[in-house]
Length: 222
Image (cartoon, rainbow, N blue to C red; front, side, top):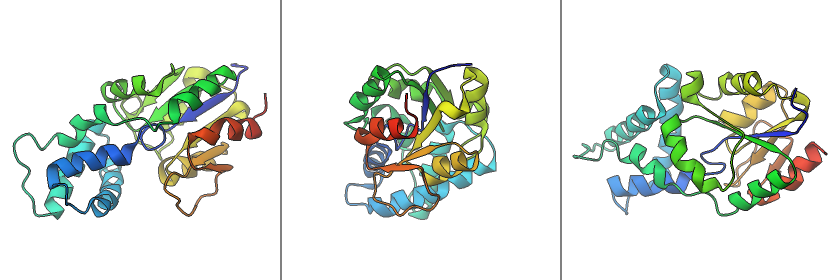
């Protein structure tokens, strides 16, 4: 069994700036004067509904979400717009503090894994932005399901034989990450970038990843 400490991470919204990436893509489709907060709110309603229907690759989920938004807006997507959201993912930036914070965790001996609702080819385009090598990367395409289903975590423990008593899960989504991990009795750190009110109660709450090394050390001392 691995003797070291493991931190598993959601990627988009936690490490990669999902909102800014999606907002830029939606502005390109619907116009710079579009009500982007409303469109993002609606996106967050549509996506889990599509993911719950059956497994589809995340690229298709993104395309279907964009089509759903266009339908809501009474908009017919033009040539080249149908895949604008999925094709934009490669350009979504990492949050500025992420590379240094992850590097500090590596320096302290933590093993790092990503558990993402994504496809292999898509996440490969984001990994170079994070600044460190992850020890494991598990995506929805690998397990044929999306968080909050437990497939990502089950596969993580199958592949690593990590000690559950030496593992913490980190995520920005209460629905996709904090709630299901908590239900599986995993310690959790909630990256509350948007100043939301908690529902499921995490073990630690931070506003960005700069506070993560300290939070993890408090939860899992060396």
